[in-house]
Length: 357
Image (tube, rainbow, N blue to C red):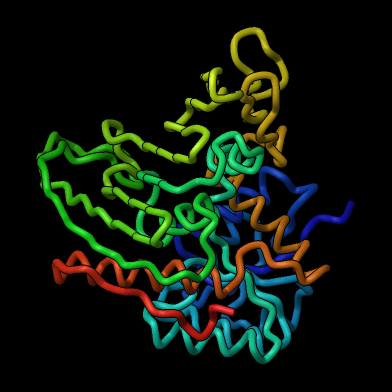
């Protein structure tokens, strides 16, 4: 099987995820080149990662032949690169969000109306645990989900999970929000723990999304990303049962309650010599998720991004969406409204947008 060949625009922290994936799975992925405008950064990326770098997009596309390009640049810069790549007929996997504000979202969606091939690298629903939850919902174990409480990712990431678990499309919810601050020891950052113990105020935001017959709640603080004492939580409820993070409570029939644990299966523990990697998740005697990247040793978020790359390759070949520009725009639009609701202290009513077809 030929590796999936892709280019990258941008040299930020997120771009290195794609490089780590390609390094861990060279038989599956190949980075054909990167656009890095800063000369010092170009030298560093070439030295550390052994990847070809170019100062301009024209230079990279003129000397390499990727199947698609990952746009991993700032919010403000992304719409410009989407337009430029689309004008060249190049399929694009855009990092999130595709544009910073509502006018920008409306504008970039005009590209797909003109035939541009764009998908968005929203990885949260592809993370192993969340993918396992989606599989359980699809089995009908909970019935029809009517309530979802998510505390695993900020803003549009959490909203994407709410919409997916509830089975919501482009319905326009009423959104209310609030903010709460509490003290916490400063958590490690991207560079590791702080030099000394410091207390700060941790800002927690709550977004309530009323879809009429379904309710979503996003509850998150940024300290959950790198912190060691703020954990993730999930609640999904339907008429036949509920999931509480990794425990499943449901009815076999109205007289028979069943409790099942979602179990993470990992190779390389104890005397197991299969290597150090995630195998998947089981619930009872069923596999509900199997790692498509095994036996590569990758973090869950890297597995999810690698899955995005695989699905993008499928999209280029078949045209089948896996997370469209319209979906990404809807999630970010609802996030913008949620921030407005928190800021103004009152409910905000979403409206149907042009991409909601």
